[in-house]
Structure formats: structure tokens, C-alpha cells
Amino acid sequence: RDDSPTNRPAEDLLARLEGGGEALLFASGMAAAAAVVQALRPGDHIVAQRAMYWGLRAWLEDFCARWHIGLDLVVPDAGELRAAIRPGSTRLVWVETPSNPTWEVVDIAAVAEAAHTHGARLVVDSTVATPVHTQPLALGADVVMHSASKALNGHSDVVAGALVAADPETDFWRQIRDNRKEGGAILGPFEAWLLLRGMRTLFLRVEQASANARRIAQHVRGHPKVAAVLYPGLESHPGHAVAVRQMHGGFGSMLSLRLAGGCTAALAVAGACRIFQRATSLGGVESLIEHRATIEGPDSPVPDDLLRLSVGIEDAADLIADLERALDAAGRR
Image (tube, rainbow, N blue to C red; front, side):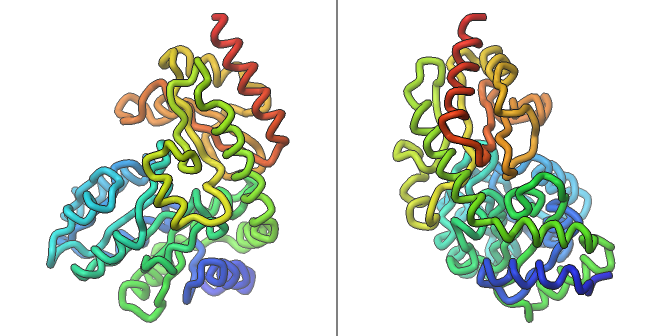
């Protein structure tokens, strides 16, 4: 089951796209992330950023507490991540860039240097950037993680995860490989075939969606009903300079809007959209909008005026018109 002839072509393609030595497919993005953390031992220490996929953050906090693994969650800044490393005990640094749902950008090369100086490994969740825009291994990361359900597949019909290693001969990677096999966290062959089908159009889809997202971000910035646009492709974004340095051909298809009218306005805009569909995934060919704080629940750190947009490959003018109509309709309520 861990050596399917259907899975190998998809794994080989992803390894080449990321410039890695080996890729492994998993039954979900969470299964891939869990296999990495479960390669550690009690007493080890993890440094991760607080702004990340909420499901992984919650699982990390629970798992590390039960398995006596130290965990420090810090702001997504290379300096803060470096300062949190404990020489001798930090074994893993986990970075997600751009980070969900506020799209901070972390300097991968700087964090990799800091991690390696203290004997830690760097894992980068590159789900949003995809290998189209960023290749973390070339910047010094040891492992790249993807929720392959998202842009790698691109058609919202697969749940899958993936890891790619720079060096597949390390004991750490061997343990990850064993975790997948022994835990049964292996992607089924039909899902692997669908994933391979999706990756055949990866560059076409991601480049178009990223171009659409940038046009939307540029259009709505300064809109009287929008308090802030969070998108690394804008020069006003705090991480723009780093994004320019480590992202190529675009800045991804994800952006968030903070509404001037607060939570009430955000919910009204989401409900008034017609092309943007209200759903919680991302990276597909269709455009989605969601009120992130509602999805994450009462303990969410996400501001309740924030809407997360996953921009698809529809005509950019139609998407902009849809948002304009929704903003106008919400303003009349």
C-alpha cells in the first residue's frame, strides 16, 4: 500500500517541481504534518509561528502537551523565530508562508540559517505559494509540506497531503516514511491519479489565479468600505520585500479583506457575493469567500471583520464586479 505504482508518478513529479530528493503522498495535509511531528521524541522542542492553519495549530498544542514536546508559537518573523530556538533541544522549526489567513511572509532563507545553526530542521508549509511561486528547498528548508487538496489538485475533488525532502537519506526522513507506512496515512491510488491530473495544469491555474488576486487587491485597496487589504503582492504589505525576493511569477491566489463596518459588514458582504461562493477551502479553480472567525469558532485569534478570499480562474473583471456589488449591497443594509 505504500508503494503503489499509481502514486509513484505523482510523487516523482512533485519531487521534481520542488527540486527535492523524494516526495511522499499522504491521506491529507494533516496526516502529512502529523508524520513530521511524530518523528520527534518527548523532550524535543518545536518553534512554530502563531499565524498558521488553525487546525494544525490546535492539533500541535494538544499533541505536544500530551507527548511532552515543547512548543513555542511566535509571530511570523524571522527574528522572533530565531530568538525562540533553544540550543540543544529545538529539533524542528515550522513555517507557513504566506500564512493563513493574514498572509504574513516569512524569510525562509533567514529562518533556515538560524535553524541549522542550532541543529534544528526547517519544515515549510508552502500550500499557498505552491512550487509555481516558491521553492523552499532551494532557500534552505529541509522539508516542504503541502495540503495537496488545495492548489496542487486544484479541482476541489481530492483530500491529500504531501511532503518533499531535500535529503531523503536522513534518519529524520526515514522516520517520517515509517510513520506513514505504520500509521496507514497513505493516499489511495485513485486520489493520486486525480492529483496527478490536477498537477498537469498547475502552472496555468496558479498563474491565472494569482494574477486575478493581484488585480482584485489593487482594485479594492482604498475602497471606503474596506479598512485593509492583506496581500503580499501589494507594496504596502509588511512582507512585500521578502515576498519579492522569494516568490516568483506572482504572490499567490489568497488575500483577506478587513471591512470598515466590522463583523456585521463582513458577514453581509460574504452573503451578498454571487460568483464568490461561501466555502472554506482554497486553491481551486472556483473563487471562494468566507468569514474566517466564524469557521474557527469563539477561540479564533482572527479579527471578526476579516473575510478570506480564495481567488479562482474566472474573469477578473467579473470577480471585481461581484465584490463591488456585494460591498454596495452591504453598505445599504
